[in-house]
Image (cartoon, rainbow, N blue to C red; front, side, top):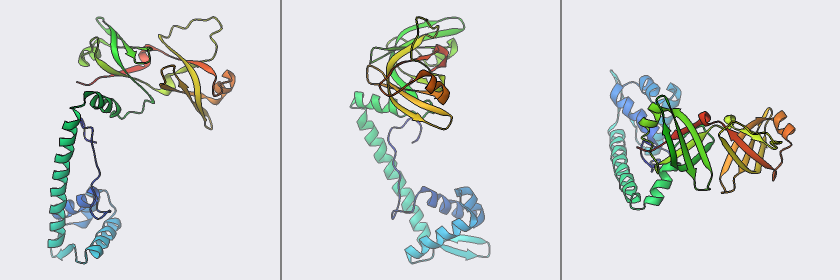
Length: 258
């Protein structure tokens, strides 16, 4: 998916000729060398030959011409390449039109924009800025979630200004699963960590060394923590048990749209 877009689609011709194949043809047309074209398109020399020969067999006409100066595309291959580029242009125009149509439904458009971020952080929560305190060096922002919970993040003042944070602005809170501590029983103690979200264990995926524990919060959102198997056993966590996810404000990353 190109940056800033919501819609993408994979284009293929005849069910098998994709962008990588046509990148090979483009590179071959530009260089006149199978070896250089294969490297450009990410194929081995043998893999490029096999693919071109198979495509030529399906086309029932040679796609390549051998010359004293190297290898060139046949007229049939050039027609195929031109058809591909024309299809690409029409496809991109179609996707742009459809994305423009999505803006007519602001709620759906906003939902898709929030879902479009690709990140390794397992925990992603959408909310709005409820409180903001920007100091000389650091800033503190509190996001209100639809569930009624809040998440507080600490970031630099420069980052807060760069994100153009202000009350009421939509934002995402991202928290790595490894930054989350699970508490099964506070035993009367209070923790300094600003973020403490209580929920119910809904899933446990136990690995060789560590486990993923998923809490379902009262609003229905899921929060994932990574803990050692020893920690899991010590807490005695089971599906259906109550637990609290605890993480510090500096462990929260904040993301906004321009």
